[in-house]
Structure formats: structure tokens, C-alpha cells
Image (cartoon, rainbow, N blue to C red):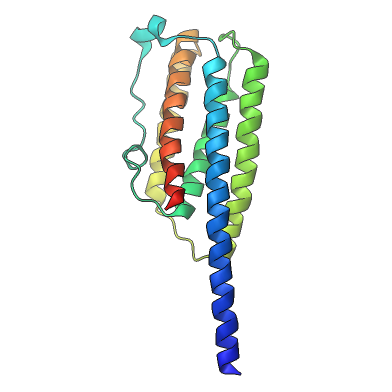
Length: 186
């Protein structure tokens, strides 16, 4: 009886791990696709940073994200969720001065929203299934990074050049996001 219970438990753990691994492969594919879609939408927004060189700023993306330090897969989900959320929050701000095509911005926000909902579901599953612990410093650094972007926009009064610089910065953040999601392969 005891060996039968142990066998069932071992099989359950094995299949749970296998399903979770397949889910991470699917997640990596979805994140990569969403990231590419967001980058393409951002590139469609008119604006060149050549005219705005005087307005450039180093927003200092958190070092642990820039260097793609070894995160647990669960951490990548949380970081990615936060990045999508903050990017969405930024692009919901005063865009009137940009002259950007509103349907492109709406498509960007829709893509970000869909991905955020998906990541929230995955994170909820992770927290229920696993003993999930998180180092809040990385998340705090990430929030400060996006706060610097928001403060910059406010200080520049949401000017066209400020939005152009922010657009370029968000594109750069997607590059780091791509590096993070590639880590889901391991």
C-alpha cells in the first residue's frame, strides 16, 4: 500500500514537472511573439531621436535585468508581468502631443493587456503549485526605472521629443525582455 502511494506521488510529480516545462516552452513562445509584436508597433510610431538628442537620458534599467542574471522561471514571469504593466501604464498617459496613430497605440495597449492577463493567470498557478519566493529588490529596482521614465515625461511636459526618447527606451527594454524570455529555454 505504501509503495503504491509513493509510486503515485512520484508519477504525479513527474507529470506535473513535465507539464510545467511544456507550459514554460509555450510561455516563452508567447512572450517572444508578444514582444516582437510590441516592438513592431513601437517602430510604427513616427518619431526619430536624431531631432531630440539634447533630450536624451539614461533611465538606468536595473542591472540585474540588463545583465540577465540567472532568474528562476517564476521570477521571469513576475518581471515580465511588471514590465508589461508599467509599459502599458506609460502609454496610457498624455499622448496628445505625439501625433501618433491612435490605432497603433491601441493595438500596442491591447497586446500588452492580453499578455498581462495571461501572465497573471500563470503567476497565480505558480503560486498555488510551488513554494514561490521572490527577491523584492529586483521588482523595486524595476519600479524605480519606470518611475524615472514617468518623471522624465512629466518634467518634459509630455513633449514630442520626450515621447520619442521614451519610445526608444521602451524598445530597449523589450530587448532585455527578449533576453529574459530566452532564459525560459533552460
